[in-house]
Amino acid sequence: MRSKQGQRDPLIEPLYRKKDIDYVKEHGQRLSTPFFTMRAVWNPARDITRIGVVVGRRFGTAVARNRGKRIIRELVRQTKESFCQGIDLLIFPKRELLIAKHAIVWETWVQVLTKHGFLREGISLQELLCKRSSC
Picture 1 (tube, rainbow, N blue to C red):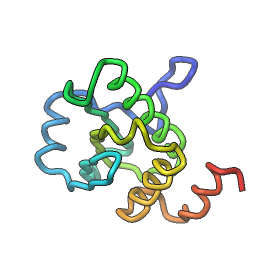
Picture 2 (cartoon, rainbow, N blue to C red):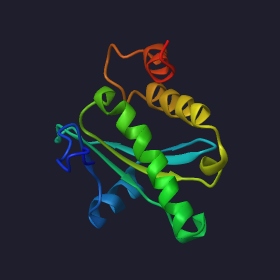
Picture 3 (cartoon, rainbow, N blue to C red):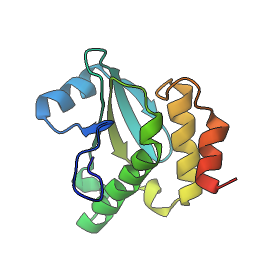
Picture 4 (spheres, rainbow, N blue to C red):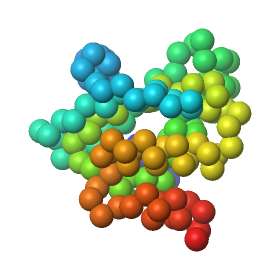
């Protein structure tokens, strides 16, 4: 993922090589929500989290596919400081993501990450939810 200045983020790297994506698809733990499906693999050899977003043509038009990717990238950007190191995540957005309210998608995102241990120790669910809603 890139910052606004075009520099790479030191915490998160894109997952874009075919062999890496295929490995995550084949060996990853599958996590499903109404808004996205996620495949996750722990990769202790890496000290960085890698995230990829895959949207196929049946998702919709190019505009819809790009919007789905933008929504997922924004969720990642908002939680990037909280991720554990050494996780490879592959995210497959669903069409429902486009019509859902952002607050509901955000809450689902944080709950999935917390439930499956993808967030660093000491980061509470309430803290992330408050960060988003400015409690």
